[in-house]
Amino acid sequence: MTQLLNRILPLVQKPARYTGGEYNEIKKDLADVRVRVAFCFPDTYEIGMSNVGMRILYGVMNQMDGVWCERVFAPWGDMEEQMRQHDLPLWALESRGPVKDFDMIAFTIGYEMSYSNILNMLRLAGIPLRSSERQGLHNMVFAGGVCAYNPEPLADFIDFFCLGEGEEITPEVLDLYDRAKAEGWTKEAFLLAVSKIDGVYVPSFYRHEYAEDGTLEAVVPLVDVPAVITKRVVEDLDRAYWPTKMIVPSTEIVHDRANLEVFRGCIRGCRFCQAGFSCRPVRRKSADVLFRQAKETLEDSGNNEITLSSLSTSDYRELKELTDRLIPYCAQSKINLSVPSLRADNFSRELMEKLQTVRKSGLTFAPEAGTQRLRDVINKNLTEDEILTTCANAFSGGWNNVKLYFMLGLPTETDEDVLGIAELVYKVIKTWKEHAVNKKRGLRVHVATAYFVPKPHTPFQWEKQITPEEYLRRCKLLKDHFYSRSIEYDYHAPDLSRLEAVMARGDRRLGEVILAAVENGAKLDGWDEYFRYDLWLDAFRSCGVDMDRYTTRGYSDDEILPWDHIDVGVSRGFLLRERDRAYEAQITPDCRHGCAGCGANKLLKEVSCDA
Image 1: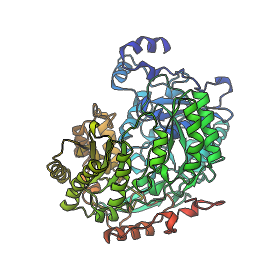
Image 2: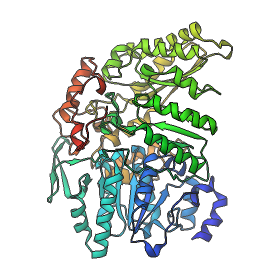
Image 3: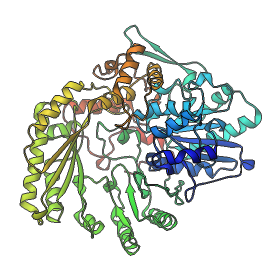
Image 4: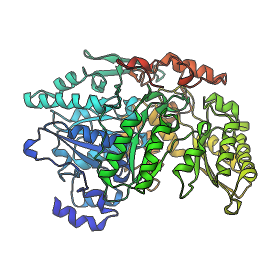
């Protein structure tokens, strides 16, 4: 296989995607390995190697005695063509062994548009796609990640799902598999045993029943398994595993730098944001631990950039203490320290000036909506005055580039709200004219709008998605009101976001659709070069599934949702209360101004939410 691969590599783009051999990759002697795990990321190498969760779990699994975890990524189209032409099966990077030789095949799923890649990777590996077609313990397929919070579209293909954070649940699963393999268990016996582990969902042990009108009527356990599966969380991040000896990629990746996770969860509660609710409760690392991890990571990897990462980094309580220690260390070592995910309501010009003493990059903010009414509807907790004050501080400090992100199609949105985006942008331009200290360089305001996708486990999970035609009308309305040459406007094409909404809120009937699309050639749907909407439309038609059922129809308050048996900690009652508050344009203060009673605290046994 290695000789064939070496002949193929000169024929494809970025051959380093497929070779392995990077600094800090982990190799083991197969004679000492009892359980081999192919850890699959359903996208390309440069995307997967930028994923912090994959780096963490790679280290967690390889710390285990008798377990060898190897990485597998989706090939680009040119490599897939060569693989099919030469009958070369999908392989793992560390050993270059075929994926079909592995005991367990794990997928981490963070984006709905990677579903086709999962099936395509299994096909390239020569592994049966349906769970029911895979007999015995060999090639046991399991998955986790944020998309597992609605696992039903993939229920036909995944043997079991691990819900929540994987640092603790993954070793428990692998230990059980190690025992099952040694004792010769059947597949069903293992699945029944693994379903007893908190946070594990085995789809084949549940039957979904539908009413005559096509709505979901019941989710019925078929054996002795939990009626509701609750996600797992890591309580103490200071003691949790962190990969300070990170693999150093041999080729450029999307986020080609070291990462430092400062906390998990979010205090804000933006009503459209799945991560903001599904990642609760808030838990943070101490500044002491973070500084030590930063030094160890940078000294081992040789990276010249490190990023502080979280859902809202400026909400980290010890940010000043941490950056006061990191900035001198990074300056002395000529390392760039970046702090993304900043909010306009707690932007620190002093911090940004310290971080960017050499070059002032652009500012990025996400007001999401153009009017205060609509920002209150989505609970953005951000005022126009805060946005403009932040811009004034930045412009007076020498910044001249601003990126502003919005959504179109949010619940209750009107044309007045759409035009409010244009009004806000012109106020930003006016603010620059009044406060900029470096007007010779000119101002660039990059405006981007996304097509609102209602997501599970949010207050907007029941909402309708506007039609693609209506979305494009609103884009044109906005574009027609941008007259300044300082404005660059981009908007997302509606096809991908419509399909994303279907997959996000879909049920088991989508399994046949995904399979049909993959058989027709669907793959790498997150990439413009490969996304073919027509293949998906044909698949929906051939399977008799109406896309509008999952998008423009919306869901009623009393309807059973396909993901209702998955508990992320936030209660259904809280989400309904938040939805009611949205329609009244009432904000819910962030967690630091008082607990709103979302319910996520129940996931913590030893500590409380660290908001």
